Image 1 (cartoon, rainbow, N blue to C red):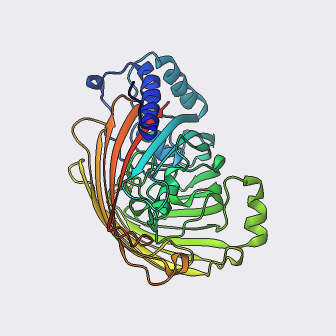
Image 2: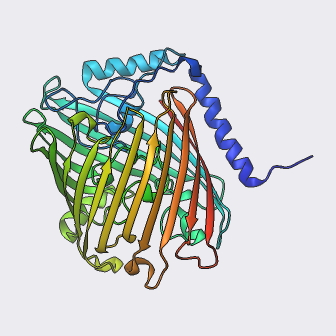
Image 3: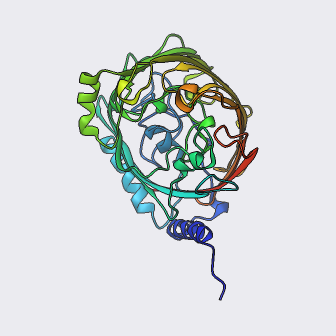
Length: 442
């Protein structure tokens, strides 16, 4: 009797489990009529399947702060559920949102990656179960809402000895081939207040925040639905801290020009949120940021955006990180509601950033089949001498993915990465990373 290789068995098991659960929805591909929603949509919008397109300034909507990877961004992208055996469940969510301002979502994400060459382990798998939502408690129905945002996650290893987040180090790559798929177990990644003022010309957030939700954001930054490599998600020249206490303010100076700034605990630890206050107020080591940007209209501020971000990170003696600063530039446009080219640059002078220099160019494409998405990115980077040591060679990274939206609630994404001249593995010129990701959203 033929036996299946362990890593093939892990992949097959992951896909089989997700497919079997998603089949409960009984949604045919031909029935898909998912609305064309900008991937960069506001934080803390309604529950998955409950609201339509992004609102503009002066329009009702619990939040207009975070980007595509934020709670609201993810909730918005999951709208448009067709009648299924789960219809009563989604009807209940709609009613709860409309009558009480309470929106929520649940999803399960799994990722398997295999490396063609490695210094150690050659594959990793991980899963993430997430509970997230928003509760508009002040001025619901007005232009100046106040909303509580929450997100709790369980990130865990599946099958192999390591998670995808650890695979980059195993192959000698000075970076991350996957970001959110770790083994941190239960973590609190969002618990903050989001307030709009002056017809949403101004908005602020304060509490347990994830700075990658709103710092240097563009339309393809979600690790759950877009790229996997950090090079094309949060700019690796920005030492964005783990989730912890922080605050930020966004102001629309004109209908097209905005400014966004804030600070966050540089030692954030989502595994121990109870320590957040001591770390923020007593230790007092901060990551600060300021961004100036242009967008043709508020509801397209993530798909059509040009911005410059400046940041500063304090010295952190306990982890032997010197203070530093940096700049990041980003350009992306959505053309004909299908093509989204982007250019992203980064410069860092210490501060704990993984890379000192970075240039990324790429393209997103939305086929006629609603919900599917293609992405291609190419990056050049210079790893940080402070983090990895001096004298390392430059790296080149390429990534290609295609997201198949098989049903309204289930997507599967094959992914291919090429790591050229990995800085920490001089024995290899090219390492190939094969990946497959599944997402079930309820």
